[in-house]
Image 1 (cartoon, rainbow, N blue to C red):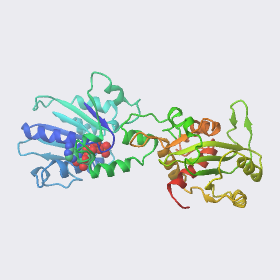
Image 2 (cartoon, rainbow, N blue to C red):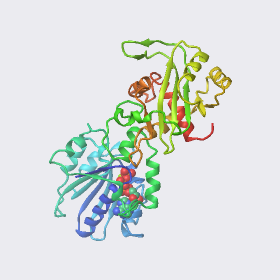
Image 3 (spheres, helix red, strand yellow):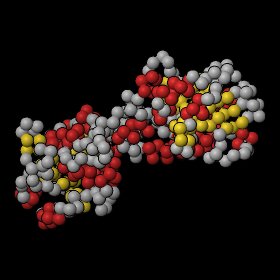
Length: 398
Ligand SMILES: Nc1ncnc2c1ncn2[C@@H]1O[C@H](COP(=O)(O)OP(=O)(O)OP(=O)(O)O)[C@@H](O)[C@H]1O
Ligand SMILES: [Mg+2]
C-alpha cells in the first residue's frame, strides 16, 4: 500500500509508527526501512523515528550514530533494518535483497523503479508477523509515474493524506499555530510545486510559466473598470520593433511590442486588468497620448521596466509618476503566479477582462525551455508589464 500526499501531512510518521508497533508486538520480526540512497534517510525518516517515535533513551538507539546505523535492535529480538538501494555511491541492492522481511517501508517510493519495488515484494517471507506487507509513502509526482498507474489497480491500496490529518498542524477543529505557519510557507510555492506539495495533486508539468492560469477562472467581465472601485495603475513594458501577424491574430514570436496595461486595485486586494494597449513601431509620446484618450482616470502611478529611461522621462513629463519594475525575474514570476492561482481560500486575486486579447494569449504561450528550465524570451511583453505591477503592489516602494 502507498500513502501519497502534500508535504508534511504525516505520511512518514504514520509508516514509522506502524513499523515500531509491529516490531514491539511480535518477537523476532524483521522489518526494513529502505530508500533510494542510505544517506537520504539520515535527515528524513531516521530523524522522525528517533525524535518522535521512540521514547527518549530507548535501547534501540544505543550504539552506532545515526549516520552509520544499520539496524534498530529491539529487546524482543525484532529488528528494523535501515538500508539504501545505494550506499556511499555504490549499488547496495544485492545486499538489501539477500534478506527476508515481514514488513518493508519504502520511503519516497516514487524514487524507486517498478523493478525495485517488485523485487522487494519477493523478499516478504519472514512470516513472523500475521501478515506480510510492503508499504510506501511519497509526495505526488507526474501522473504518468508507474506508482500512480499501479495505485489505480487492485494490486495496491492507495491513500491520500491531507494537512488536516497531521495533529501537529490541525487539532481536529482548526489549524494550530504551527499549522498556520507551515501552510503560509507552502502557500508561497508556485505552479507545479504548489500543486504537488501544497495541494497534493499528481500534476503534469506543462512547460507553461504560469501553470496555474485558467481561462475560465482568471478571465471575467467583472474585471472591468469600476468608478470609485480603487486606484488605477499602469504596468508598462517598453519595446518598438516587430510586426503583427494576421494569421495568429497577435505579434510574431520575435516582436517587441510596447505594452500598457491598465489595472485597478480593488479594496479586497484583487488586481483587475481592464484594458491593454500594444503597439510596434510607434513613438513613445504618440503611444502615451493614445492611452490617455481612453475613458479612464489617470493612473496613481505606473510601473515601467528599469531599462526604459526615455519612456520614463516621457511619462514623467506627462505628469505620470513612475516606479521601477521588478529586478528579480524569478521572484516576480513567483509573486504574479501566486496571484494567478487560487489561494488557500480558493480565491484568485488576478482577474483579466476579455478585451485584453494579447495579454490573454501570452498566458498560454509563455513557456520555459525544457532543458534549461529558463523562461523563453517570447510572448512575455504584457506578462512582463504585469509582473512589474504584481511586484509593485506587493512591495510598496521601489
Ligand atoms: N500523528 C501525529 N502526531 C504528532 N505529530 C505528527 C503526527 N504525524 C506527523 N507528525 C509530525 O509532523 C511532522 C511531519 O510529519 P512527516 O515527516 O511524517 O510528514 P510527511 O508527510 O512524511 O512529510 P514529507 O512530505 O515532507 O515527507 C513531523 O514532525 C511529525 O513528527
Ligand atoms: Mg516524509
